[in-house]
Image: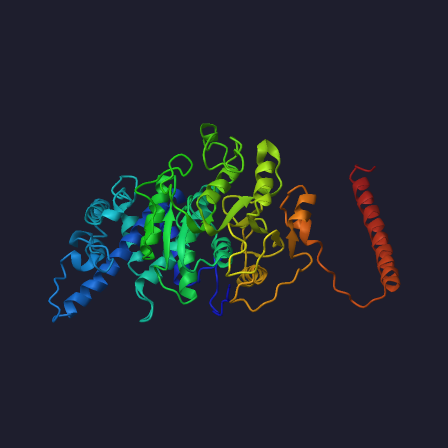
Length: 523
């Protein structure tokens, strides 16, 4: 279950601790000049990645030098690979590059370094950006950016450089997503949304799968969850896939920064048309598929074996994704994913029939309606679906024939003019409600329906609503607090107040009319 964050540090809109990350972003953004965010993203994130692997290498290099009795060769690549540390050739090490940061050929030196690292580390083949030598990239600003990133080091003795660099990487991803707007949504899901998915699914151990993994945020949050609850890195096996080649590379770097081992396939690929994990049955599926995608090639998949509940419409991939998730769930698997709100009620092109079949198969476990403005890619409100293959799982209460509805549309706070975030308290409330309803043994809270927020609903009631899954239809209105004032007295008071307001309104109208008449616009 979610635990309230005890830290007193200020949070930014994506839950990341503010401090030097924000200062670093501000400084790096000034160096951007006229370069657009999509292009600059690869310049910055590539350098941060280079700094990370070099820091990890140098730390182990120093240990090998200090261990004189061990007799290990600090320049033996196998001494690093044995500890899951990338081997960094001399010419690619950060200090060597930073010493040349003011040289006009710094771009070429970085490109050569990226090539050398890929050559020595097969898992990074084809992943790293290698376009720093292009004439359009200002080499003076590139050198200044290197000096800036070179300041990222151990914050204190208890913090590893991987943690610091991972935080910076995640923070920069979120800011680039905001700067890129709709395109940013292709590689970044707001952290608070990912947190809700992870906290509800609670992926302690097993296989975690995301067939449209973007930059890998679902996996990062899953690992954070495990560590927070006393587990360790590696308790889960991670499988992912991403169709966008640039985003696939971002995911590989993002996970490497965190030291997370993941099978994202040998290259980018479309999950619908080239499933890289065809035999996978996952214990947990977390995903944020592209909303309402119309060009997914559905007309070529009419007879696909995944469409057990009905063929999805060719002009909307939503229920194609849903059935892809179901197909890859293990017999006791749980899935949590983001979809556009229309998925809860649409009846066009067979969507209503697919949703009905899901409900009648008792696959739907919980529906959460979220507020609008959470995403960089869209202002429209979205919902979270949670599916369960086995609602009679021994770990939980028997909840067969029931669905939990949570209406969280009033939650969150605005972090700027157009973006909202769910707070830690919001996430805890949603998560605790679900875990109490599910009957998790670790949850001490007892579930109760809360008018206006949550309700446990039997399938018969959902049938009466035409198999629509919009939480607002079921949770009812929020109970109004009784202020103790008798209704007769309240109506007299409010009527008198309204009468005075009407008088003021009439005076204002007359003043406006007279003012218009004086300038020749009377009516």
